[in-house]
Every structure is written in structure tokens, then in C-alpha cells.
Length: 336
Image (cartoon, rainbow, N blue to C red; front, side):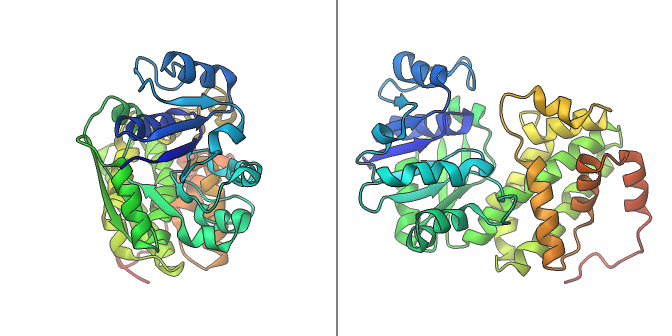
């Protein structure tokens, strides 16, 4: 399917998705904040800052101005960090032509509002855009997708036709795209898994072993289910690509930025120093705070989230947090 698509975000994930879209025949225009990145994508078909060693489709255009990127776009795929989405969409709004399909590939929860990305779209662009937004999520490292390694993701929308449109432009011989209707579960799964990737990294950084990592994943999934169900999402979604699939990948894969943050903190490094040394955003850090606030607001028990918050934002020693986690009152494995 051919379309004119604007990709808002020139990082690794935005560039990898742009490359898939262009290889499939779409006319792709990328907005990148960094002028060096934009110039290199546009003139050299490379993005050495975020995807070193990858040759991009020569048809991809890129710019640092939003107007030429958005002009005439029938689909807008935003891949900016979640905390920047409101500002980016606000700046983009004057240049929208007609009613383009909005697609979210950003994984996070807005810090001050506690809103999911499709809800931010609704506030910035209007309720009709938010309701029609399609969310793309699933276990997918950008570097592997850019190397055309087999990947599977899901596209979720309340409007079935929109999910199928996204499926049509992204599906390829190395990227399989499924569709579904649970936007809430898909967004929360893609956001919350980053918290447990940090927690898993901390566990491994402390040398706590394989048992502890497995416990973090499974009890993390239980927490994800409790919050998602309370907020109107479907538990079944978290048993799929946007839930356990993405959770396993980010908690165990060395390409996971959030896991790397956890590993460094578990080994005794200061969070501020770790983040200062990263080129890209580790969404799980601020998602931890936003999720803790949501959980308290909706009276949902999420002990691992609370533990991650204490370590990251209150500088409580990880060993003390671990002791408090293990000393909690015994419970049944499942409760509502």
C-alpha cells in the first residue's frame, strides 16, 4: 500500500520504522530535531547516531522543520519520547492537512497528567483524533528491525479499518503485524514493561540470580494486569505481543535501554550519571513515577513499581528495598 507518511522522530525506532515504510513503497518524510541526523538521513541515507552501520532506503526524506514533513501526509507516525509528545503535536497541529491517521509508536505515560499517548493526542488534536489513533507496540528492538531480522508487533485501534491500514503499510517479509481493538491494554503493556526492565536490570546488577529475574517478570506481569484491568484494558492483551512479549524482551535483552539503566543502578552507579551518559531516552524512569501515581490514585497494589520508585527517586539502597519486598505479608498468587 502506497501512502505519504510523516514520521515524527529521528531516533532509532522512528528511523527503523521509516525504513520499513519506505521499503514497502510509501513516500516517507522524517522530522528529526537534530539537524545532523536530519541531514544525514536526507543526504546520505544513514543515521549513524542512532543506527550505526545501517543503510537506509534512499527515498526517505528528512528535515528539522515540521511543515514540509507534514504537508500532504495521510498518516502521521509519532515516535518521539512520550514526555515530548504534547509539545511536538502542538507544534505540528497548524500543518495538518485534512484528517490524517495518527499512529502512536511511543511507549510511555505522560508524567503530570497520567495520560496514555492516545489520550494526549485527543487533548492536543481533538477527541476525534484520539479516538481514531492506532497504537503500535510489541517486542521490537530497533537495531534488529533495521537489520531486517524477523519481528512481530501489534496495531491496536478502536476503528478496525485504521488498524488494517497500519498493518498494510508496515507488513513485510521480516515484519509481521497483527491487529486488535484493545488500545488501553496495548498502550499500558508497552509502557509498563519498561519499569520491570529497570527492576530486572537492578536485580541482575545486584547479582541476585535467575530465580529473582523470573520472579520480577512474572510478578511484574501480575501488577500490569491489575492496573490495566482497573483502567479498562483487557487481561488477554497482556498475554500477547504488547504484554508478555515486550516484557520478556526488555527484561532480558541487552539492547534494552531500560534494562541497562537498571544494571548500572544495581551495580552502584548514580541514576543521574547513568542517564547523562545515554544518547536516547530510557522511558521507564519517568514511567515509573507516572505509574506509581496512577496506581495510588486508583488504589492498585504494585509493590515492584513502588520499589523501583524508591530506588530511582528516593535513593533508597536497593538491598534495603529488596529486604522490604521479601518481608511483605504472604498472599495468594492471584487477587483482584
